[in-house]
Length: 116
Image (cartoon, rainbow, N blue to C red; front, side, top):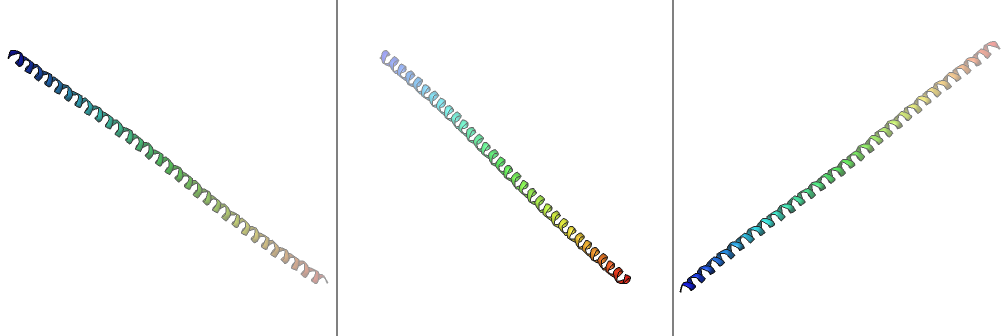
């Protein structure tokens, strides 16, 4: 009878010990899973951050390119306008010179007429 009681107690203690061990194992597993999940989330976040920065850099590059293009276009337009203005000015000057020359020619002609 005594031995039965001791065996029963021993079994009970062994069962308790096993249960405790199992609980400890489950806790350890949960902790590991949680750690793994946190690490994964962190990895995901840093990946998103990298992609965001990459996108921003790309956008900035495109903006710079667009601004450069606009600047080039404006410069080209200004240059063409200036060229046009110079051409107009030359035309005016040459017209003026022709007018002056024809005026002088008429004057000389009148002078010859008077001398005759």
